[in-house]
Length: 261
Ligand SMILES: Nc1nc2c(ncn2[C@@H]2O[C@H](COP(=O)(O)OP(=O)(O)OP(=O)(O)O)[C@@H](O)[C@H]2O)c(=O)[nH]1
Ligand SMILES: [Mg+2]
Image (cartoon, rainbow, N blue to C red; front, side, top):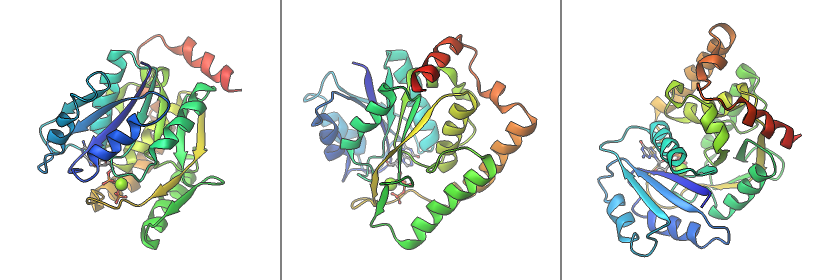
């Protein structure tokens, strides 16, 4: 199996079983890894009840306490690389991302992109049911990130992403600084700085219907200062060299870029 969808969870008991079923109902075959941070609502227990139905496709990593989305994904990336997956996806548990779009992200990476981003802010992308203040915050964050970093990505905070394994191998995951929205920005920034092709695939993002948002002021603050920090590090501290892993993946990277041209 080559495709793994990583879903980080914290108190998602209303969504977790149906999001897992929705991925396994797709025509393309995906494996699913849930990274649960000791959700007090019993999310992990619900995942375990599905093990007997999907013994070879469903996996769970349990961490002790809520440690943030970024570190959950880093944990998942390491797990995925160790198991040999070729295409590694990020997706939320709350149905903001439509599982059917996983196939379109996969196609984009398969046809040459190093990173495929499910994007709200390209032509044919959309946001449904979000209050005006959330849209303003999200669009403002995208504009702000582009102005400061010059990274050519219209939806830099997007959390619906497919990475080719070569991209995750090329990044020194221990050097990633951030855990919230800034984590999503930094992963794309690192991939871009290392020369990978990032392709945006239009998606319709829907507000969660069930469960509570984990968005907070700390996450926004990290984003505001994090973007400036990334720019600073890349201007004066050789960000690219620091975020590059020591592995000999340069050859593979060039191969992907050529494919994407
Ligand atoms: N493992 C883990 N998962 C988390 C943590 N924080 C959030 N998540 C999960 O990450 C995904 C995105 O979190 P959300 O609360 O939906 O954040 P958001 O999409 O930015 O905000 P909303 O649009 O308001 O829902 C969901 O699947 C959450 O359960 C965390 O600290 N650890
Ligand atoms: Mg959400």
